[in-house]
Image 1 (cartoon, helix red, strand yellow):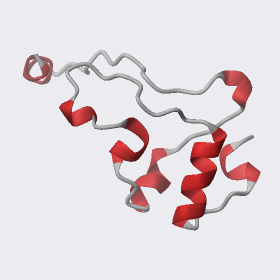
Image 2 (cartoon, one colour):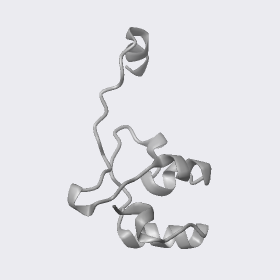
Image 3 (tube, helix red, strand yellow):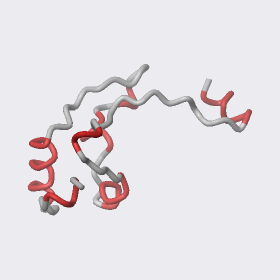
Image 4 (tube, helix red, strand yellow):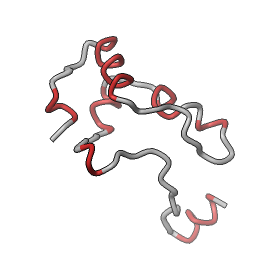
Length: 82
């Protein structure tokens, strides 16, 4: 199925599994997490073994703060909130 999209030059019709409510005033950028070598499974679970992507990690503020502490990343409010 994925190959069929590629052969036709079409984008995959993604179904969002993770995201933040607008009222959370969160901005999220994958780039700094990729540069910090955070494994995708840390935040998204083992999607490589899933037939259908499902939400397995709760992205609470506590989850993010704990990870930032562990990685010694900034916990300044404006890093994530606007």
